[in-house]
Amino acid sequence: MPFLFLLYVVAYIDRINISFASLQMTGALGFSDKVFGLGSGIFFVGYVALGIPGALLVERWSARKVMTATMLVWGCVASATGLIHTETQFYTMRVLLGVTEAAFFPGVITYLGHWYRAADRAKAVAMFMIAIPASQVIASPISAMLLKVHWLGLGGWRWLLLLEGAPAMLCGIASWMYLTDRPGQAHWLDAQEREWLEAELIREREQAAAHTPISPWRVLWHRDVLLCAGAYFGGTAANYGFSLWLPKILQRLEGLSTTETTLLTAIPALVAIPAMLETGRLSDRAAERRWHAAVPRLIAGAALAVLALRSAGVGLALALLSIAFAGIVAAYPPLWAIPSTTLGAVAAAASIGLINSVGNLGGFAGPYLVGLFSDRNGNYLGGLWVMVASLVVSAICVLLVRKHPKELAGKRV
Image (tube, rainbow, N blue to C red; front, side, top):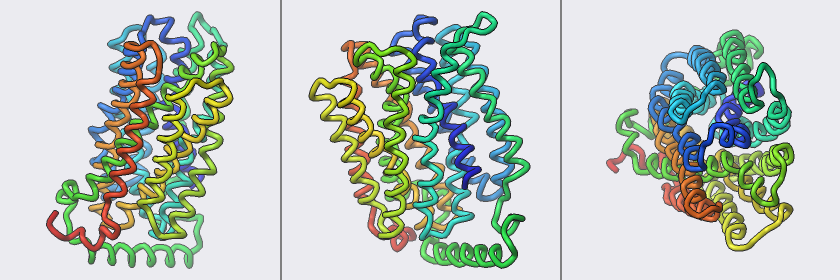
């Protein structure tokens, strides 16, 4: 888990470091908010294409090989983004980054099902996905430092992108050397531990298969899978609308400097980490997923609505933004525990790929709409309301998932 956590920190930094780079990049290249919003979100146009194949490759082939190849290639693309000069180049590199990173996240969610029992899965997803806020905490001071440099005639934002792509390539090599596809291959477990865990996971897979006689292709049209995709869509629209625009929103509040803005973005992320872990723990303890996913999203929407309705200084704005980000990401562990807990292994892998692919279209919609409204209105109020609406839709979708979907998965839907 610590190694997978590290991989996701690297992956997420490569997605969102463009938000820190934008503090200098948009001015240096003459990009409008609309251009930046489109370029930020267009990452997901490429990302949705390979989500299902990536999850199925991990399930049927090898997590180790998929992770290695994916990280080596996306690291090269992430670094090359620091060499762009035009809007077209910006859009092209973001699409390519999405394509090369597409298999990683659904692959890891599928991979966790190879290692964690259903009763522990939301907690496991929480431990993995705290990389989202943790990456913001880690990236903030590093990005603040890199934005100050001016080496070889290149601006700080270029060095930020060039250097922050390198860890992905190193992690790709480490994945090949360290990861094992199944517990039975793990040399760092003793024989008794390997046998017990393998037996527990085989028993669960057999039970799930008995309840879910459904092919990986039929599951793509399953009512509850589509609702989970809708819930994930709303969450990612708010998440990436928030994460990719947070530095610019903070900078506009009281004319903060680039360094101050970059460092302050770590505060909402620090609040989100314990919220995410606790939600995953409580969800496993109660063996309940829907309300544990919906309530945090509604709290996040309420916090953003308050921020949109009244003017706020930096202190109040940071408090509301911290509550919002904690609510956005705290819903992920129980949400992602639904498919891997209630469907057979191959069907779950296909559904995870679909949920990730369709849901991440929200990652395009959120940043783009925030930038579009900003260009039209000269402020971020319209973007805040887009995030509020997305969070409400996410909560409604997850509450509509049937309480015991595994009992109904084999029925015609």
